[in-house]
Length: 326
Ligand code: F6P
Image (tube, rainbow, N blue to C red):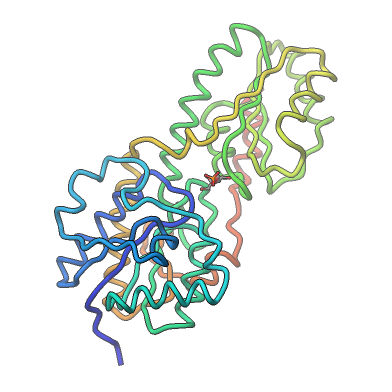
């Protein structure tokens, strides 16, 4: 029989992403709307283990929909890899009589939630938040759209100076295991080449493509590189190309700039919809799942699938780049 939920915990975990605050707001307000009590858990799983709780009401999440980062703060908590760490986390939830818990984060955070689902009666529900967009079970994770726009703005600026100096610029974007950001900003920013973890690339063929583009009259180029690419460190790729082509090159690593900033509308809307659907799912007896949006429909994916199944990049984009950057 379906157990009636009374008290919901909420935390953010792993890398923060723009739109997490909009998701917190949606979860808190819809939970209270449905008569649940809500407790904010600060500093992710580390704060959970330490018992860092704060009772939330509707006003606790006022004025945050437009804010980047996460008002709950976050952490990467290695204790959750061990059963003893998770026992402390479960005991902390039970000490507050929390019977449902929403985890906003990525695959690593959902792994811990899956383990706790097996080790306790608490109903866990995930909301995918990661700029990397590498979580199975949703077309987009919260933060991806904003990170792409931030990186794109940087690339547009780099393009100005690259063409002023006739240089080849390597722009490294985030994406530890996936090339979603690289591919998307590469296409949108008119990049000449994209290097992503999903596709093997030989640096000699990159040099050859650049030589041919010089012959066609190009004087500057932008190569977008995902940090997790399997070729080499971006700085080594840059130095190699400089040495082979005897041209001026520069490297710009966008880094954590991509994680910050006010979420754009697409992320706020996605976060709001997923937040409401997370609470509705829990109220309807769903647990051990992450909520997502696939082709415009809300779906609930078992936690295990979110990290075991691999989301694939859109290879059309890769085919378009050489055509469009001629
Ligand atoms: O959130 C994902 C991510 O932004 C990756 O793209 C990146 O490799 C990593 O987090 C950086 O993590 P940290 O903030 O711990 O350095």
